[in-house]
Image (cartoon, rainbow, N blue to C red):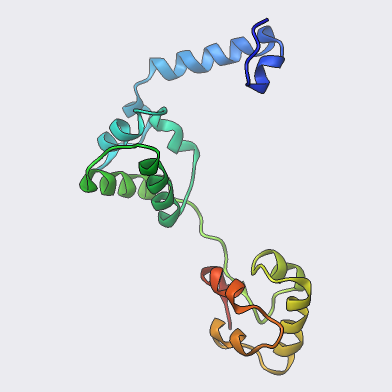
Length: 166
């Protein structure tokens, strides 16, 4: 048995080979343009993304526009080549057809300690400090947390887009 760095090589090749062959045959039988939704930017997406991986890989990912911007920037950093117009077309295509759900913002005036720790990124003691403070003065804007003793506002600032006060 030939050794590789892939963990799947340790498994029995007979057990997984039929499924792999079927997936490869199906993927090869249908052109990428038929697997991706039609629309402006489809050709650019197939051409630019298809040089390194199957372009339909994007069909399994759902991201916000900002998330797709990060992915495209990462791919350009790894060597993807395209004009600004082509990259913009790819961004529009992916963010339109493979849009992710934005997380529901956390209301800081009603959040539990666990939510403040997991979503806002606060430490347990910072969560406790905010909960005690908001009992007397609930926030009206996220910036109100600057005045809370014992809360590192830099953490709040990093996750501002997920936080609200009402």
